[in-house]
Image 1: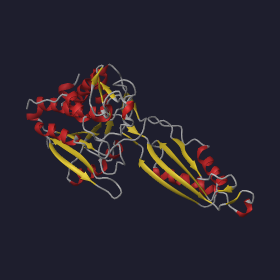
Image 2: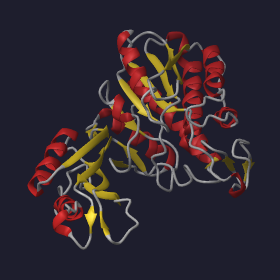
Image 3: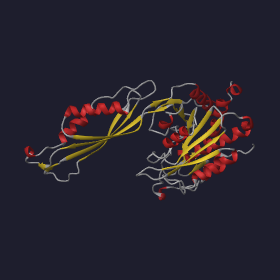
Length: 389
């Protein structure tokens, strides 16, 4: 098998697909169209859920044996915003100043193209005698509600006896330069909505009303006045941020009947969503009064402890880029929060400086180097004796 893929050509083809969540725009068909000739068996997995749009996803696997190495990522992108603020056509995949421009260039169609290119090179050399498996788990729902994508794909894999041994997610993990950072975990995220109920009344007659604002102020003070923790060996301290306080009251002579607040907690592995729920209840109950609390945990904190997998990836990165990467758990959530329940997972992709911005772009050299890194990871993972030293 001699066919290999050029990451740049595939990245341009993917960027030209208008795949703003939940639309696919032909991105997955484009990817499937280049993977199947390499010998990948492809499954299109469409999932739906009440209140959300149907989402198309792609699972592609080369080989049937173990170990099974998976590349995971997404083909969907965020909206382009004001087209007039772009200096290129957002889905034009224009080449300029040694960079590739377009929505999804860095987050993360570029990395998906590097997945495929690296796999094609590995297969061209070793495909005939290869006894393991290489797969790609590509969702169209990462930038959206993330309910009809990776989590349901993983359940489908489990139902069909598809076992993953290791996974590399291609999110743009590097702040400013390729090679700076590998993610070996992520903080959890809990969003809360607090509603404190009282009795509306005239501000001149407070004894005839029940103003909920003093209680809300006390409740919010109770959860913001203390430090959640001081961090751990691999995680920064957890933090709580108030994101909204609102009573919807434009009159100065009325005390409101209801006050609402919203907050978000990014937490490390000293906490869980449930333990934070109990902590919040204790604080709010300590103030007293009628209230309701709605919580949503979009992901629990997790850590893939440094070991053979992260050591392999870090060594390859340093060899190719000359940069020793930091093993980090910083930043927001990613689909790795679902994958960690199935196999060890780490994240490494392109530079994220322009992700979600106008004129999103990736340096052409970074595309080439990321392909080399992914290719070298496959070599080291499947042929450690041949690549040692």
